[in-house]
Image 1 (cartoon, rainbow, N blue to C red):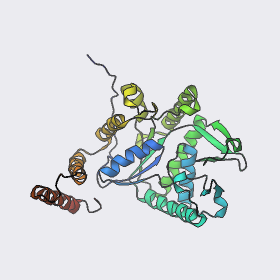
Image 2 (image 1 turned 90 degrees about the vertical axis):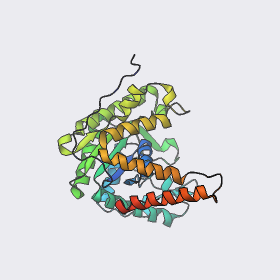
Image 3 (image 1 turned 30 degrees about the vertical axis):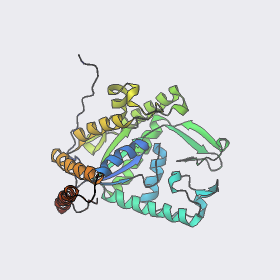
Image 4 (image 1 turned 180 degrees about the vertical axis):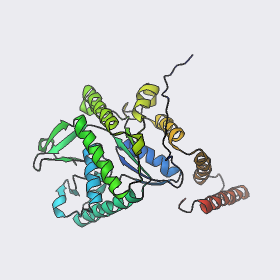
Length: 316
């Protein structure tokens, strides 16, 4: 008896991921989940230098600023709730000191351009089509930073507008890195605060817009993380306590689907070696001075040495 409908995943791309790949991840919190997995297995990654971005317009602005070497000044930040903020960035970059946040923003811009210039793969996860427009400047923001709701207009971005943003993102990155492979995905995290119907409308806009942009011949692909969650894992036991976010089991399941589809086969063998070392490093001995534990540490050190000879960029 088959108790699950499974997606048949195919990938005809010649640019699969291995340990020589340089991966940039941008977008919603699901990018962070996959990014943490990639970091754990010691891939060369960079993720969300401006923090989590949920919608395409925010990511587009980030790319525009990075490609054009924008310099953030005092006009780009504001003070609220005892901290300085920028509407282009997540609150992770906010700071009580004005000079510090400007330095952080400009460092992030420079590092984003550098990372995009050398990236082999750019993975972009979109979370929502709903955006907030700051009334005073008539601009769409990446984050509201708890500024009162009355200062914003909430609106849903059309399919065509999202598609135009995605096309612009691809074109801008290709202008500095023509060989980059793009992988778009839709976050399986449901934005229930927008409303159940509104969330489904939002996700539909994202999926339709991405498929207007996807073109495997131009190295622009789609990975169905949203569909895997909605169809293969359609059970609340795969959700966290909030019943909105995928839990660890779901994240691991989607990660395995991703590696099966997008990773070079021999890369998985290296991942197993990294996993052994990572688990060894987190091991807590009953007696750290025992001979047995000292032998364990010696074997672990040898494993690390052999791996670092092959991949010197790794750091444990």
